[in-house]
Length: 140
Image (cartoon, rainbow, N blue to C red; front, side):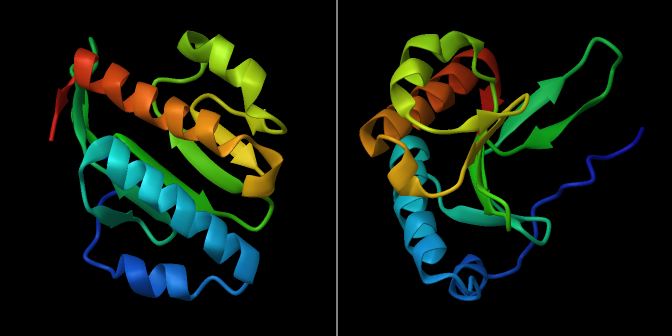
């Protein structure tokens, strides 16, 4: 059975954050990291070369495929800061209306800079998404 391409690594999260050249993006990442630590109670782990994840959950599809993935995480991409809201956004419509300026993918929240969104609402979204994952999956 195929494994996920994105796996946890032993690389240093601190070194990764310190390597972010854009001073504002580095500051934004540190704030989001604090939100994710608070929401999960977990230490940060590098997932692949450019994703920082917090916590883990175990999934199993009806096809029989199963694996582990992060509960939440972020990646400071060039175009936007990507925040991973693993359960997606359909459960969080009320929060999303109050969040501010953003774009979404299936479980990716794209933010140009943290000042574009309401930080209190973003933190609530992260907390609620982690709670949802813990309710529906076996988590670590």
